[in-house]
Image (spheres, rainbow, N blue to C red):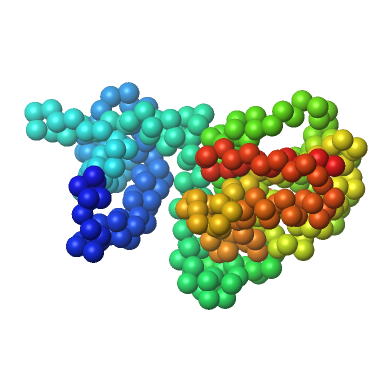
Length: 302
Ligand SMILES: C[S@@+](CC[C@H](N)C(=O)[O-])C[C@H]1O[C@@H](n2cnc3c(N)ncnc32)[C@H](O)[C@@H]1O
């Protein structure tokens, strides 16, 4: 990799080729997860040959060997040669984040990306052309009712919840500790029917990944409603992935914003958007905390 960086991209497009191949890397990890490779290697407690993995998972020997070899190349698995036979073993990272049984497992996030996000991104060209989500083309569901599409079956609803929970397993602690929340006695993690229903009074409202789903007018309406329901001295805690103010990154958040385009009516924003929105709704003292990870926190007071 280092020698690639020293060469001019014009001599040979190493970086470009790596980007172009990115989807294959993602899909290889997704497939290994769906096949149960990481769970098997964790449970077996000893390295396994490709033949043993194939036999236990009911796959072809050749297919699994190629998949395992790629996972070794990208340092998600390890391999050891014993008398000419390759024995595959998990790494600590795979055991912690990819095995289903780990408390820090990202398995549900991976399943969602593989089975729902991936087909949606297949229609990214149309999403960019039309400037709207692709729920209709991808799943035959109305593009206006984004959560009818996301919750189109019990199975999909559970998958989406699994995706949501996965991220809090790795990002939850940073968000929950970003600010001193000890002065707020009653806290509501906003759900229910927040656009049309009544919002109960509380000291603190948590809006985690809510604002990025909707258009500006709905966001202002929602925050104004929260402001009137909020107890004196209360506030609102927003958890979202923040763009840089100049929108030149982080790359991950830019990809999230395109994801919002293919799946919702919203987008990701820089901090100034939230400050503006919160101020317009009547909140003050807006504080922004960047975690340096996927999600950031914003606190504003009534
Ligand atoms: C992107 S998810 C975020 C879930 C959760 N706050 C988190 O961060 O893990 C958006 C949430 O908004 C909820 N939602 C969508 N429309 C809603 C509405 N009209 N009233 C209340 N909740 C709604 C969905 O059910 C979903 O749980």
